[in-house]
Image 1: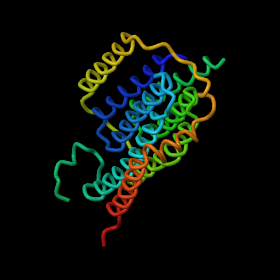
Image 2: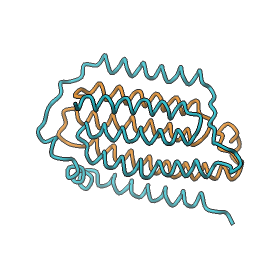
Image 3: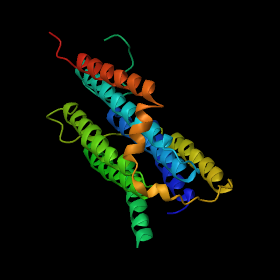
Length: 102
Length: 164
């Protein structure tokens, strides 16, 4: 817990699980959860490097705040799109969303 | 004692993240994601990032996760008993993600990380420092991202309105 490797290992496992979810899931909301896992892994890396990188400023925390804001905006817009998709084609399976016309 | 707690946090994060990925019921995935996000907040506490831990709990657990659960509820037909999230491309996904994992492990364990510096000022809380950074060095980025958040919220409300 006092070395950077343990945090990086946790973050890389979270990242790989998120990539696995994004590739394999067919439900759009499950893909969104995978993206949240990836963003959390990035945040752990930002804060761990800020802690162990020998800096006396907290720039990594500010970057992590920006990542959280982007995640919130992305989740709001993505869920609006998913609900519209459900209203128009009756499912949230991304394999069946194969036309751009609404 | 604290290292035991750290180990507990890591095990909780990884098992619940695996549950998020492998669970076939979407609502179970959402509940497992709750534990993952709480565990990440605990990791932030270990990294002396008190403000980030509070932000993680408030925004992720209180905001984004509730939004996701609303999404699960709204995109679920009443007559289907449960939302089943089926999977595809299992082999390709496993190969790609395990390749990425091994690549990251190789980088993490082969790199010669610098010795850790114990700085006394780390114990004094991070909120004031983050506030100073946000309103001095990162003022432009702060304003731009606030406008982005406003635009995203208005846009999502516009997208999901009931069409007349």
